[in-house]
Length: 207
Image (cartoon, rainbow, N blue to C red; front, side, top):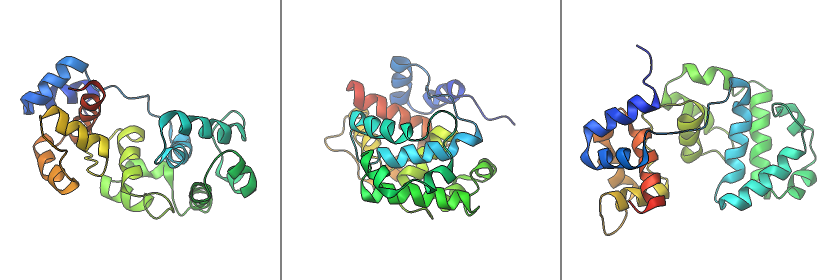
């Protein structure tokens, strides 16, 4: 059976929960950037590392400087491995993020992490593969699953925006903690990625 589209998944989520139905009505179907080809997965992960724990504008500036080191075309792990650490730091990457992107490049270059095969694995297997890389934890793995692989049933309970957005949408005095959110999300399966997207929209718009 083919995987539902984001539009179909959004409508199905609306049938599961009246609050989500209201969010779907206000914000329309879930919209995500077009998924990259398998050759772009290394760049997607490197960008996720660069953006960790930074405001969007600052992260975009640093990423732009880093990406400018390599010119057009897909980002090449071997090219990253040949880049002096001083150049990575000069682009604005912290020492930890520079080391993480280099470790990612090393895993891909030596075949330890076969990014082109990840689409054949289930969500848990993908996460287990990714978290072997320095600087990649559950949050980065979840974002990769949702936005790069287009998986529909990922529930990123460690993401503050999802927790806070859930609190806004459901009128809670305080956001649920990760353990609470884990249980609260069960009713959204098999469309928890879509529910997370609407929690982000609720936080942005105040409802």
